[in-house]
Amino acid sequence: MAERSGSSFLAGIRILPRSRREAMYAIYAYCREIDDIADDPLPLDEKNRLLAEWREEIERLYAGAPSRPTTHALLGAIGEFDLRQEDFLTLIDGMEMDADESATHGPTMEMLDLYCDRVASAVGRLSIRVFGDSGEAAHEVAWALGRALQLTNILRDLREDADRGRLYLPSDLLAKHSIVTRDPDSVLADPALTDVCNDLAEVARQRFEDSASAIARCDRRAMRPATVMMHVYGRVLDGLLRRGWQRLEERVSVPTATKIWIALRHGLV
Image (cartoon, rainbow, N blue to C red):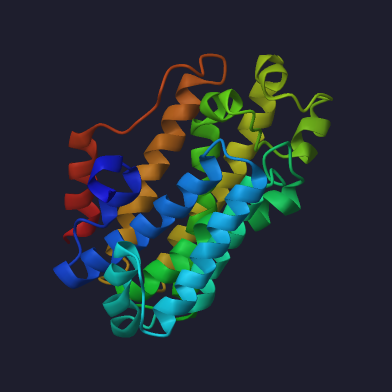
């Protein structure tokens, strides 16, 4: 599942030793499974039922009796790396926000920040334990880098999300630049979209800077995967800003050769 995704998130995972790498693949697979529920065009009641089943499965996992392949893969990791049950459940909280659309129609900046914490920084809190540093500075990395990565994803996926009827751009910034509508297609067609996106990109840039500052106070070797992710996603944000916000159909990505160079530069030294 992880390898098929082609996600930039995996750029930093491949440099890990085998047991840590497999733990991260299992965490990633879990995230994809619950995310697929939130993205599926099912009735809300059905989405909530399926997510509730995953809550029960996490209870079984921590009782030592998982019933699904993904949670079987997680079973060894939660003991080896002291992964917290609350972080897995927080991710489900985030998927419920997607499912009931509380974060997908121009949320407030406060709501968007909560959403980023649940769907991204919670992954970071699991990841730092697998990486090998769960100190205070490492938790700052999880907080900041999770938000930086999620905001970058939001800016990258504007067109794709709008096609699903979703709009993650915060209402605070829409109002600031006099965009009244919350219809996704209308927002993307508004001339002020550039100003909104540039403002949100500045928030993401600040979170990247916060991440770099926190990483400098962590175990350097343990945080190499986070450093690689930070630089890969930083390149995505740079590419989005160069492309601008009027040609959203032009996908921005980091070439494989560049990812390899980043992994060599920041992941193996």
